[in-house]
Image (cartoon, rainbow, N blue to C red; front, side):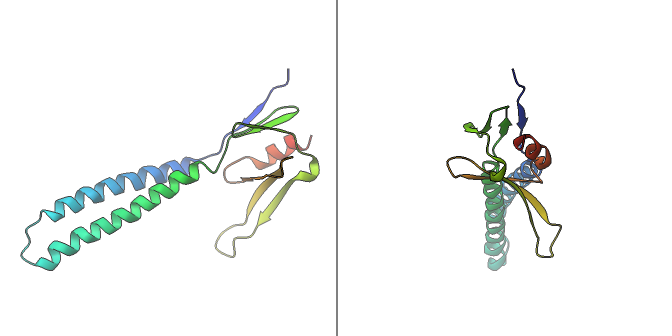
Length: 144
């Protein structure tokens, strides 16, 4: 029996962003409610401070939901001798022409990144970025 290799995406930064944005959201909503009860003599300050806290809470909520959504973009990959399982879907191993490693420039904002592109028989292309997966090892297994 052939041993299978399982590659899970590295999502530590996404989980950290979820924790930070979630806690900031809860803190800002609590702060907005607290500031709303404030009886300051200036009416502009009574309105402006809770509104600012609500707005910042909305930004934190968008960061939380964006991070939560990005968790589902990266499936787990399992490679065996004659098939690969991507996020629970079974596919035959692709031919060598359907597996390529591409480098994308960052436009001067940071280092370039590499992405492993795998096209399955159903013409679906799967992208495995280098910062989430060990692309060299996956490519070696798929090109056997």
